[in-house]
Image (tube, rainbow, N blue to C red; front, side, top):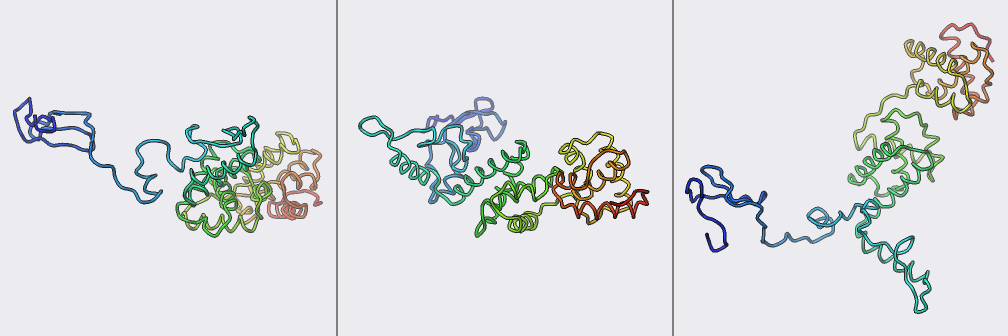
Length: 306
């Protein structure tokens, strides 16, 4: 034994050349590889930190500072279901509770990154609740927003716009038939701003999105106006044939799906006007009429134009 209480001779081969592995906390014989000591504790000094970012990266205990609302209840919360301030008579002092709550938020969320992440996750929760987005897609959007935050793309831009663009990008990558108009209606920002942020995410983060297929929009539009399965099947067949002839290239997928459904309804004698289909698909009646005429002409369909 040496002065630190550690063995200095291998009990297997008698070698005195021992190696201390700090990462594993073990003393290993350099000759035969026997683990002489294990589960040792490093009693050296802690690593110094000078800012909150280093403290988050080097922290070995407790939840991360940026764990946001998923901290499993370990962080303190004042007001809104948490602790409240009571006066001498035992009555809740609302103004004092709000003041303490604001101070608590400033203390627990020290950096701008943490505050932006917290606000962004709340905005994402609100959007997903309004649009009935699944948890898997919500997590994908959260990952995109975290990458945008890491690349400092939020600086000088609205957090709500970046969050909305992240959600739209996640939906596009998963081939979910949601238009940007639907996403903008659920958001507090306008379409132009969200489109700009969406293009920025594609450019800076290097994401690739598949081309929208009108077939994915057929069932969504048909379910809104309760069309039969026969009409949906017929519309899908029309779109597949149009896709082979490259008629759908450069066209709005919602408009193409709406026109295909209208043609299918005419062929199967199912009552559905252009106005009803346009409203269900989120496009104008003029768009449905133009796409209808284009499909009839390019595919040589024997139908009476409306």
